[in-house]
Length: 512
Ligand code: HEM
Image 1 (cartoon, rainbow, N blue to C red):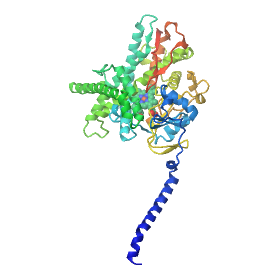
Image 2: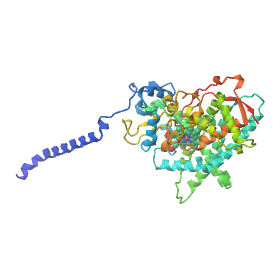
Image 3: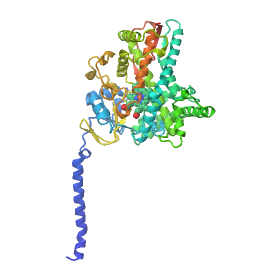
Image 4: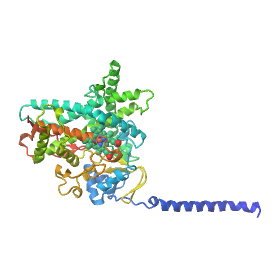
């Protein structure tokens, strides 16, 4: 056979070889990755073109609508909001799978346009994707704000605030109803802002909305927009609904507020050296930013502001709402109030200063706060977790970039877990329950779980316990105007966090 007879056969031979290789490759891919060709997906309620399942959750609180759907479709289901698919988890076993067994796969966060803008391109802790930057930021927040280093300063500020509150309440004429919701908000705001931003934090943003309105607007924006779920139409939806304008305005006001605080710190630093006692979170981070040859992580300006946002948006409302719900529940339930007061007063004896109150041994108080967090999880759907790589949950395929909503609200109220009296406020149910929720147990998840769990999981309940103990030690409480316990409005409302819809007003009676 000479060279001229072989050459014309080459293309045929080559084509055959390539096809054979391609065929073998496809066969292998199919047998290894049958999830691509034949995926088993979680059940999904019937959806409509374009909007998906939006009509099934629209107009109702999302956590309640999703809980109702899960009763029909099971503890692992999927829903579509527009073109975006979400995995919905509604049982302790499945929550454990996401937050513990496969935590390494579900520990990232989704990208939303509002979170991107407000967190300076995900420079923060709560909305940052899972990466080395998140690790550094979380370490900074824990060591410099929520950890034991600042706990002493926080409790000092809290004691002063509680002393002022007792004096205020004692000076009111008898039978005056006070708005406890407003009072507790001021106390927590003062505590958090003083520790984070120092004495010279501005009570009121220089321009724009009031402080409370600003935080409320920021929380609403962080809750996301409809446009995030509609790929092509998204921008138009957000433009016409006014979301983009609200986002721009909200960001500008927040940015100006935080800039003013940072500028104050820089100015004061050059005026005089700040004593160690007066050094707050912003001082510490500014020092780190300016340090030459630092061996540890050096945050930049955007990192600092993103962490300030996490403190403002994550640290205040959640804590205040838990305090308000706890006071509402115990005032609706005289048996619990009497038992709690008896424990707090007998453990404490006669004291004159708030600083002498020690809650460590008050076991019933801890159960009361736990029960409050069970019935009133302040973050009902946690912050959406994001799947990083293909995996299976309960035999269903879950793909990378799928956002996961864990219905902490529903899980914590489920009678199949908590028994017939699941809806009742009954702190004694924790008497024989050992283990940490979100770490070893998943029947309630007020602080989420896994590596994205709340960094304030230990300090926040301690602050709530301290405030409740102070309130019930120094005062007896009554509902105003002869109102009956069962008439107290217990409706909830809110966006990212779930607070009491109507303010809590009570009449204090000085006990000692
Ligand atoms: C009673 C008070 C609080 C409750 C109930 C609460 C609840 C939560 C929940 C449910 C999450 C989401 C966890 C998850 O997605 O798995 C979270 C995350 C977070 N919380 Fe809290 N929180 C409270 C207080 C605080 C405080 C005082 C701070 C202080 C700054 C804070 C900062 C954060 C941050 C930064 C994250 C994001 C963590 C991450 O993604 O790595 N929280 N919190």
